[in-house]
Length: 195
Length: 341
Image (cartoon, rainbow over all chains, first blue to last red; front, side, top):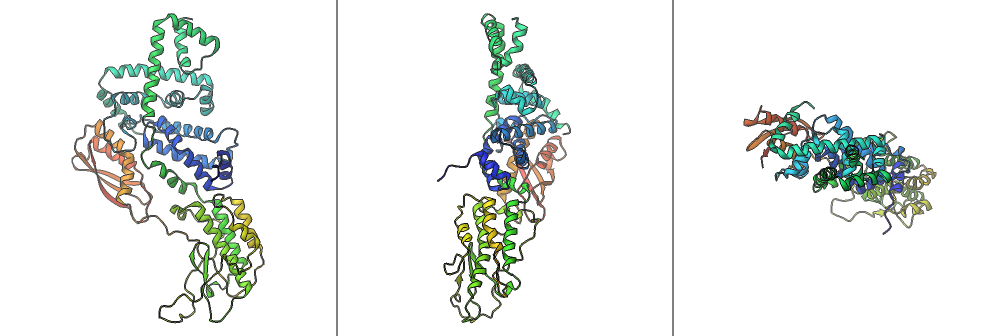
């Protein structure tokens, strides 16, 4: 069998209306973009929304894909920005249990205490701080790449990462000294807030 | 450098964003400053905890990836390539003169094979009829090929109607000729028309038949179909009408199966679990859910002792965000139990 078509070739075909080519691109990159969406949102349902919305935007925006960047990079940027908008629109902390409890599966085990603590702390960060930190620490992106992806100066990226780390450090320290259930009770109030 | 300056740079150091002289200066300071080293270690442990937590959840649930495209495709809108092919197929038919199509219908037995009823006994089809038949069959082949190349994706039929001219209604019914006998008999001289070696098919059609399935390029398809459309077909009273390209029946189920409901509920199970945790709900919570044909939730109300409670409202709110597969029938109302782990 032949070599699978390269991304840029598939993207060009998709741009010309070949939906099958776009399907191939989706199937090739969906695992990666789901992981990114999950890193950024922390919840399967949110990650799923982000994946669908990002792919829809990618399809509609194929005309703007000029091939200068890799398709994966272009798609990743869309995912990040959709996730950021999603977090901003939600305007309330993510339920800080899903990631550690096992995504998308019926609840079965208590999440590890550390994971719960980390997720509570992450949920309390602003979307921009959270997303920037996750891109730097989990997605292993360089400041320059993050700056291009988010459309902000590199200095802003550095400040956000530094700020997010400091806040997280303080909160994790605090959280580790208190009962997690107490933290969850605090979160409950935020959850009840109108979305 | 002083500690204050160094600590502002620790984050950049962790991200390898501090370079050259700055990095060296920070490193020199760290060598002699235990407090800053501890600070660096604390920040690094934050990174590790975040990465460990989030990466633990990055694997999608089983089967999730199989449904990504399935759910996305209907949202993409009309398929321009498929529409174009439909138009071309319609042109092929109209150029071939489909005025009296019903008088000589074709019956599709499978993709790419059109079986023409024998018509009156003893009557031979004129060569040009075979040619016209080949043209129409080619249209059917073209559509069938596209279908095959795309795979059996049932949602295809859910695509919105095309904006271009639709092909004439395709009729694949039994011929109006009286049946020769009621006794079971072999099909009367069914003649495969395409690809019929006896018929003089246009060279382009042969070329099209050889298009690899893994290269369903729109341009190639258009190129291939165009000569057939431009071929001056004779005016005929009896003309083959291409059967539908084995389009699948609408795949939307009448109602959701148990598994479909489970699939939808699994997505919000963690949210519901969070409600159980946060509101210290014990036991079972029964939720009455109205699922709309588009897969959305029309209403979700908690029943029983949790009804009206803060925890019950939390569960109901989570369930309202569930998404299910679309279905054809009327809205479904179900009762779904959630059990605390």
